[in-house]
Image (cartoon, rainbow over all chains, first blue to last red; front, side, top):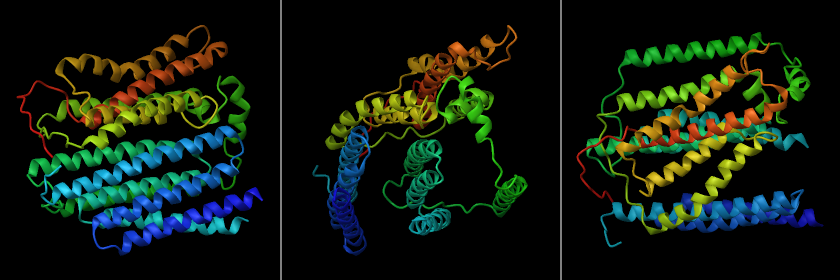
Length: 96
Length: 321
């Protein structure tokens, strides 16, 4: 039962990853693409990490997965911000 | 049960080869670096699939993380030197045919050598697993890879540390004429991220070093992660290298090699040869060496990222946004 729940979460997570990738390929400009990637992948990663944490053998492993999720979420959000910021500055707008 | 994994492995292998070809053939330097980083990440995944988590950690931390940062920094210098900031940089002068041919010849020789070594190796033999497992009680640590690296073939590992030392010596000797391109202003979100990430990286790097005694991890992986602390400090300008810090930096560069060689020589004598640690103190000595080597690796990689010896230059404060 628990395994089925975890498998459902992981599958749902991959669906979000695929949606994010489709967004990356289909959206017209860099801001829309970043929007698709950061949002969809963030949720997809959370779902996959949650599913894997349920399957983890020990509480320590589950805790490590939670830490990994936290740091990837923070760093990918920061990366998205940096790319968007760079793109906006490169366009010439210096209204920071 | 193995079937989906075989398909996954095949896809992974195809993706790695395709990324390597793409990284070599794409003309835009930035795209090239991004492709190289993805290539490194997938290679790390391949090492995991080959049940070599130690190599995977090293590949991810050094081969992908630090090397990617070094390449991006180099591109930053190139763009700054040529005055092009945001335009896509492509090499202006084509590589001479002679250089390409020589490179191709050397790569071909290496590939040939690897092929000969692969074909010459005993097929499906037992390898050294049994030998290593039998000798593990004498190594002082519980993790076979650390036992091999720091004890059974410690001399090779010492030479690997020396290679890194030689690299930073060469960089400090040669790289004097490089443009002093200021690091870009990254904004407040980045500063906040750095404040959050810095303590976490210190903990992770030290953990990787400590856990190396009984699980995948060790000096090279921990050192590369700790080097990220230096990168963050340099990028956030929380630390600006000063000329009078050179002495400390030089000390940190040679610390690992020095302690490693000193321990190797001191345990020699009394019927033992170099690197033959006395069993009672083997774990202590290995941890001492690993700790010092970690510090050296971290400082050396951060210094390589900074790229040049901090010399007293004309100080022009220019904020490049």
